[in-house]
Image (cartoon, rainbow, N blue to C red):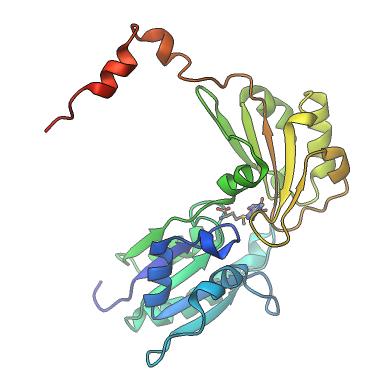
Length: 269
Ligand SMILES: C[S@@+](CC[C@H](N)C(=O)[O-])C[C@H]1O[C@@H](n2cnc3c(N)ncnc32)[C@H](O)[C@@H]1O
């Protein structure tokens, strides 16, 4: 389709402005329109709070439009749908006028992000629309970074669960995976704590809220986090740490010296 602007989904990272990538800054600065999601008509945009110290005011003489878009937090698609439609009307209007739109999203755009359905709906309305995603530092790696955990090593396997959609199978998941990341905690802390206690993994879990933001909170004794409502930016990570180990498997399968030999092999031209 000709004459259409380009849509960018830009991850702005987990909270600290200096975790924005160079590419994110370049795209956010150069787009004609900066689309900023927020969860209520009167609330602030977390994505804007993160990028504002880096971007500052639009550079003169060229002005950049800053478009606030409301996406309420709700599990009810019928409640969310009109807001998505209204947001896409606004984004679509700019794209049809040939303007580039950078949709800024907290963390990474491919993980539980409003951008997932913004892109889907934009491509439905404008088949052939050019879309580019700028990956961001996700909370899934920011939380281990601030709490001193390793997510996985050697043969370990990771599961990511949106807790607010149910944790009834958590006991089973804890048996099958070495690391379990529980996002969207909502009001599920009591059930999470109960399942961890049953699995004997309560002491292997950490609760982190607003990682890398000034309000960051780390609770290592989950009994003390029982009453947490889990604000919008809270996560629990459980690590068994039973199967970690340097090159386990590969080391056993390779003849002695194979690893060093491979390192010393000349690169293919
Ligand atoms: C709507 S999802 C957005 C995820 C985001 N796209 C990402 O890549 O991190 C929101 C959930 O991500 C997690 N989250 C996002 N930012 C966080 C932070 N700074 N600290 C802890 N958890 C965070 C929480 O579990 C929260 O409920």
